[in-house]
Amino acid sequence: MHNFWLALFGAIAAVWVVQSIRAIRGMLTVPYLAQTPPVADAEAPSISLIFAARDEAEKLREALASMLAQDYPRYEVIAVNDRSQDATSEIMHEFARANARLKVIDIAELPTGWLGKPHALTQGARQANGEWLVFTDADVHFAPDVLRRAARMAAERKWDHLALFSGFDLAGFWEITTITFFCVGFIFGNEPWNAANPRSGRYIGIGAFQMLRRPVYDAIGGYGALAMEVIEDMKVGKLVKRGGFRSGLGIAMDSVRLRWYSGAGNIVRGLTKNMFAAIGFSLPLAVGSIALTLLMSVAPFAGVIFANGWARAFAGIAALTALAFHAGVAWRAKVSPWYALTHPLGASLFAYIIARSAAVTLARGGIVWRGTFYRIDELRRGSV
Image (tube, rainbow, N blue to C red; front, side, top):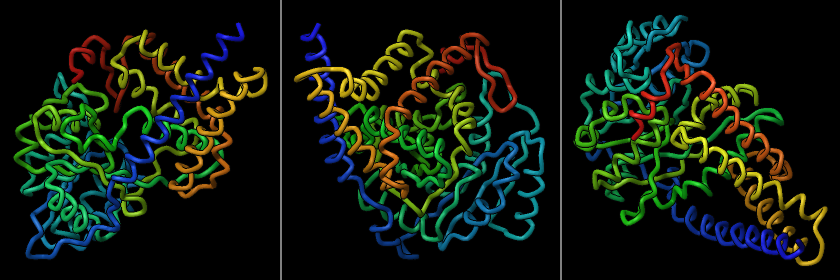
């Protein structure tokens, strides 16, 4: 039995050390938006900034005001009201009356065969006139120079698609614990730095900000190709890479910010529709993901306490490496690096979210999103 624990913790430690080195080296190659010079007026392509909103009245005003305050010579904002029940439409039209840059589209009904967000973004793109399309969300706040710097970054690197890592406005113990662990898992699991490598199958898409050349958007089928895709933001990047176009990632930090979810309860509920979809609605993959999360991020801390000899030493190496990497993520997120100590707790919450997502989706036979129920069989068929 001792040899089993020795081999297990040795393997876990090796994975943590090797992948941490790969992740650090990879993320150091990702450019920062703030270090990219803004594009000059004469070189600035026209841009259409598009977002869809459903019942976002609480957060919409400040976000929309920041989108309309861009220091950019040729751009428009297209706001799509997706069947909202609150004051979302009224707020959009109020802003439109005061600013000619803003177009508002009101959607009253959702056609069969569509999820609400891909349908709304498709309608927005159809009305867009820009050479580039920027897709975002209704709760995202933009610094005034975001479009200038993003246009320069994409042009300099000859990217057809640019996704930007956004900053999070985090508050409270549980929210910080959950989101910082999610970021660690996302970096380790998706290797986003490899999205810019045309030889890699890795891809990236971020709902807060992704920018595509209009001909590329049309060539990949736009959001029409993602009509029944739950994680449509990531899958945009997959379609770009599959189409042979160049995709890239930048780090926006404070230039693109959002309050993703308010409190751990909303995080759990919000990710319930996403996590099972992200692993292809596969129960074996869900069980495997839960087991891997607990083995990698909880077991080493238990091993430090209960294992002996070299098994304990390897568990300690794994735990210390996990804490160090998590501390770096927390520091980048502008929260205390001491939150790294919540790593096993965050992992346990993450495992619970995966389990809950699978259980709820299978029990319902599908998901509820934006007030509409979708059967799991049609979601599986529509997955890209």
